[in-house]
Image (cartoon, rainbow, N blue to C red; front, side, top):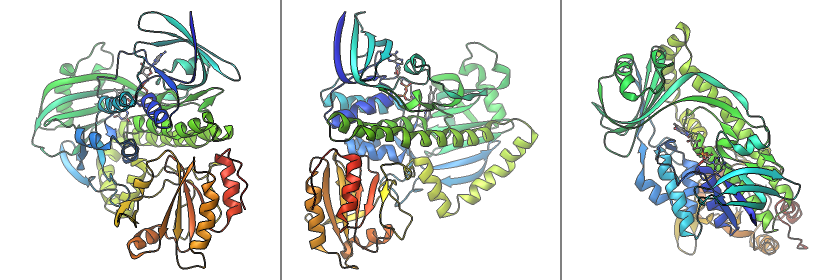
Length: 536
Ligand SMILES: Cc1cc2nc3c(=O)[nH]c(=O)nc-3n(C[C@H](O)[C@H](O)[C@H](O)COP(=O)(O)OP(=O)(O)OC[C@H]3O[C@@H](n4cnc5c(N)ncnc54)[C@H](O)[C@@H]3O)c2cc1C
């Protein structure tokens, strides 16, 4: 039998595995990626692409293509029994918070194709029709038995294995890891179908009905919608139910005047909410559905898997390249497990409200919910808060051992937060740009904010730059002066004195400290770098 070695083996080429591969490719790490399927999915599956995902796509250079293939949802129409109850604008909900202030609709199949195309363009290939059969691990490596498309078996010894093998994760089973949680009793249906009705705009329509709900997501094609809802009870025990069987019942239940056209995809499924206890087991890192599954409420599933991979990739790359200490890898579980727990719990609460049976539940859903939603989301602050949560730009790692702050900011920003989206003035090009334009590399970005309001000036900044220069392989430096053009950025971040932000390769602020306190920054750098430069 063929035997081989590789630094990283990714099992599963769904969105999570593909993102992991794209990121490792960016960092120049050698890897293999296998999937038992023939190719990327043909099913639309996840539809919502959140702003945080689009920011990562921007960094990968694929955001323009993504935007061209999908459509932003303009607003959400909340209907009760087919009648409009509230309209909630979505198109500019996150204005000023990100370059992508909306909820974007782009099928999972297209997302996978974009990531796969990026991989191929960068000289990598997925080994399709290739299944992991067996797995075992020792302290220093893991051995995986695979079978390729010709039926040939191979034993791969990998330093690290990424379990991106989906909700049924064979790796999770091989390691006998628990997947704690539960399964909702309702059965749900999902259908991509053409619809003829009075509504012509690209809005998200959500209809609340007695003991039921249905959400209609606009897709790129003119009259095509993704509809999700609860399978009518009378069909729950029917095997092989089709959309033709249920569509008249759905129309009647929801009291909406519409005609369903061609069915492009139909499926029924049970929804689970489950999570593992640790995202790492020895040499294996779990990511995406292999680590957490939850209700589709809020369109978080695929996006969370993409963020898992993005969080892990730079850490793993730097450890493999001996740039960062092994301890960096522990922060993957430290940072992503709480995110998964929170997500499973919040989507569970929201989803339970929508699917609960009983008179009281119906009264709440049909009378109160639309009113509360409309009133609360009428406030800009509530809308922005909701956007931060749903778009995933509000995810933060403040309690992580990689987050350190040695100076207080007047505002709410803290080390461990995603770098806020602000415009800064490029003094060479004489134009204002998004700060994200400076964060496209695989390095940390040292942002030196020079305020003019304290004694700290170019001299101190030069000493800091000299110090950081020892880490040129891992850190780029950018200085932001207190010019008129930069006032808005200083003001929105509430920067009242000179300071340093060290932004990680995944755009999270790892360190906030004084420009002239080289001791503290040096201490912090030991947590992310193996560089042993002696600093004055
Ligand atoms: C009907 C449906 C509707 C959904 N709607 C939404 C939605 O609206 N919004 C949302 O965010 N999410 C939605 N989801 C969930 C979303 O599709 C998942 O969260 C997402 O696919 C997770 O990606 P993943 O890469 O982690 O896992 P997967 O996409 O499941 O990929 C896992 C891959 O591992 C491969 N694999 C498994 N075992 C092996 C093995 N032994 N050897 C080799 N390869 C293996 C599989 O072939 C698969 O390609 C939906 C899912 C379904 C099924």
